[in-house]
Length: 245
Image 1 (cartoon, helix red, strand yellow):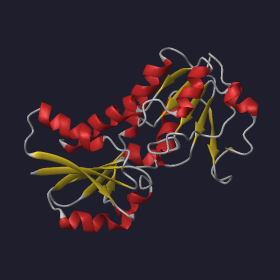
Image 2 (cartoon, rainbow, N blue to C red):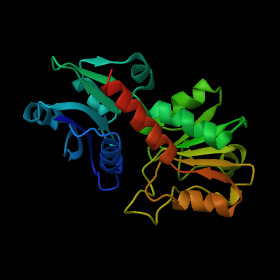
Image 3 (cartoon, rainbow, N blue to C red):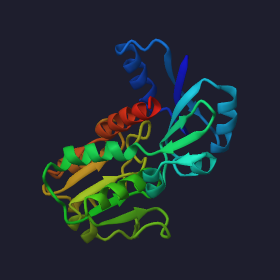
Image 4 (tube, one colour):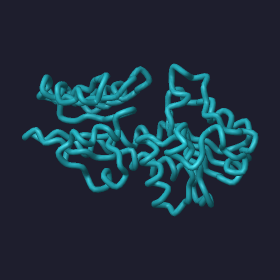
């Protein structure tokens, strides 16, 4: 049996196991299994791997996309440049390779959301591992961006001092934080939504629920919106390719 899975905490919102289980069924891969491994600490990863030698690959989600890196033997150049890992490949000799497939999903999501539009600047909500990939993707496109964080030391703004002008002038706003994820579906990043216009594009990396309060507020203001499903599927398929190389 070839086993794969997801590590992170919490994992109640994740659709990864369902996605891969359905994929294995459709493709007749009866020797493959995907499960969720909620680890209280990323430092428990070696114990998980020791207990399950048949684990071939893992996805990594919040809050371990950066902290897992010191436990890996090799990190792909792009993941190193991004500063976050969301995909681990375990070689037969036990070597652990870190990759970032979030970037593949983000490229697809931005293509779908923006089409041919080229926003002059963007606002990124959150500064965690997912935000690292967003920043990399925006830099690839030559889109300047500012960061909003709960921690003043990590962003250009905090949610408490975010100027209205930063929202009105940033025609692309990306929620790279977990705010609004199931089960906390009533929450949304604290930004002045009144300054969003029909010229805005809102991307939420959250896919559960499909319509977050963040996106709903954008829709009510006439903005074009996209949830995290495109990114989720893109990164999942990119992970599968890596595990099978």
